[in-house]
Length: 128
View 1 (cartoon, helix red, strand yellow):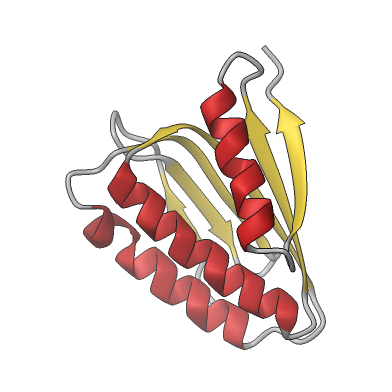
View 2: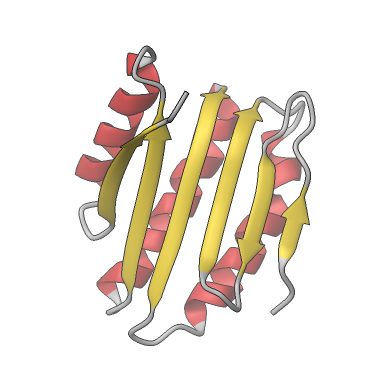
């Protein structure tokens, strides 16, 4: 599968999904004009990638400092797919980065841990 690498813009995150290495990374801010358009192909490629996994480790790194409600919906779609992959016998490790002064991002991550219990949630404080 082809790697997806999109550089960050003023309103979209850096996307570095290296499917061969089983490492998926989002970094920056996410408030695109159309979250569905921005994330659509990314989610479809991720769905195809996860469908082919059997008892594999997947490392997910999320370092988002801001995301709007439409991005949240897309992120929930991603985490639902990852949770299903974990339920199917894969090991999904979510490194959730947050700023110690931003409780909102940490709280969202903690909600993800509750909503998607089959994903190993690993909170990480951002180094300043």
